[in-house]
Image (cartoon, rainbow, N blue to C red; front, side, top):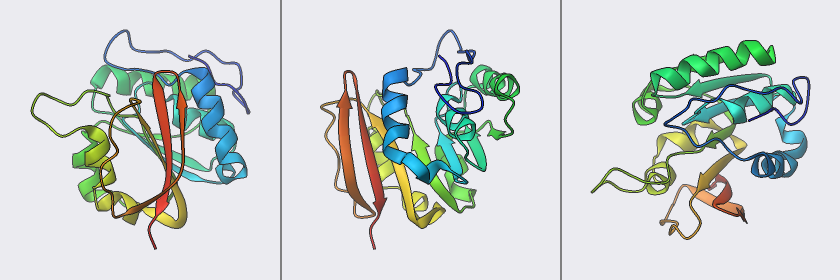
Length: 182
């Protein structure tokens, strides 16, 4: 996994051997192409951060700050190493995403969410849990955006908090861009 563009463009980042599914470079490039100038000066929240690729890419491209939320201890350590490698300053919170959201304070301009594609047996899919979580839209500024990765073919649940503005499929990944309902 590498940083595609910006001040850290071209740098290789560390990735845990297990437990994460980093965003492919072509998907990351498409996400940031869609975000365009919104990234400049943005306050970013990276949920299910994995190795930190999305938040670090955002900071490399001019985001003002990033908070990385990751429950896997090894992955959280790797995010901290990747922040040093990329020479960017972010905050890592080693917590379950939903526990973090209960007490999180914003505001954020962009929230990235790249959850595991498979939920625990008997649990709701993460897409459902995220889109129907009332805390996430409250953390966004009025014109902020949620960028959610999911498995193609996974049904998108009813989500009264969001207006879907774009959905694109990139092989084994679908990316949804959503804004707060007004």
